[in-house]
Length: 168
Length: 328
Image (cartoon, rainbow over the protein chains, first blue to last red):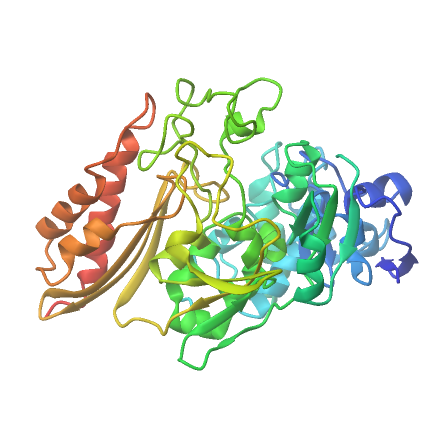
């Protein structure tokens, strides 16, 4: 078995203590994924596993054997940005950029959740089939990603441009 | 992190066999245990990954619902039957943690999460009876704004951090366990312990016992709500929370279930308030009297007396909203 990281098969580490985050950064040199708090509080390490957003700092890499991991490097590249990355540039969705890869991965996972009708704490109707990604919904659903530069307005605008009602 | 042996299991029998070994720990989504292992507050010598065991969510023969222990929090909150029949459970889960954490965290792991008391985490700088039995408690005389007001002891004033467990407690859930000697079922209200003089023991789980699933009885009539009061609007633990189900018939309380979070070492089922309300008038005065009855034994620490008033007011507000629309 192997972990499929950005479509490349990687052996799970021999030492089970290695987090998915450290595997990405230290062994594969995929340094787009950032280590912020390393305790699940900041969201900078967010990656997609089988399309679901998770925190790679709280993930033991061995637990993810056989799964597909997508990091920010698997979403876009210089000159070939993911549409959400381009929107972050357009809307000033970052200043220092440290939280940005986590924000991008988290937003893509979040949009998939909204598309399949997962409600949030602020959704008025628990049983609604569709979620309209209003600013309030985006803020609640993205609350696991901190931005210490405070670029939240730009982040919300970027996400709404790509995944909001107008984009559907 | 202290070194450990890792295994991934495909059956509950295999899990229980490995889980019986000294120093073994079951691992779910890792959102709490991995963090505690990194802080070396937990030092298992073997870790048994049980996320491959049942994550099924489905109706039971009696019209209730079964939740596999490996079901992720998001999967439970978004499940059609949960949203329709147990909206309280969906609401409670969605008010907790972040989207990423809910995608990782499991039902079993949510039940077994440890307290978020800062003194428990502060291995180098603070004494804690839960972390090191007999050491003493620095929270009692320390900064204890988030700590317990009900059921605490001199040894420990920590609170249980879960939102999901408050809903499960209000909904009369049952916790299904498997050990080497077979299975047993524990009511959710009895699953977590009060600290007494053994705060290092959070639950009634026996060594090596595995949570296989949680079941809910058929849904109650009436309306439900989960209200969480916290320091910021999202991604924060509860100062206090309330899970409530209320049925009003002819302006009287036909049935009521109430549980509080953030106030005690365990999700706090408000049996006194329920008894005061059942059969009585569904009025604000009655709700207030019930809240007074439940909090009568509350004991504040230096910084958390506000929780007592907050719990009362929130209870009255939630019951008032639930009663509205059921008035004759």
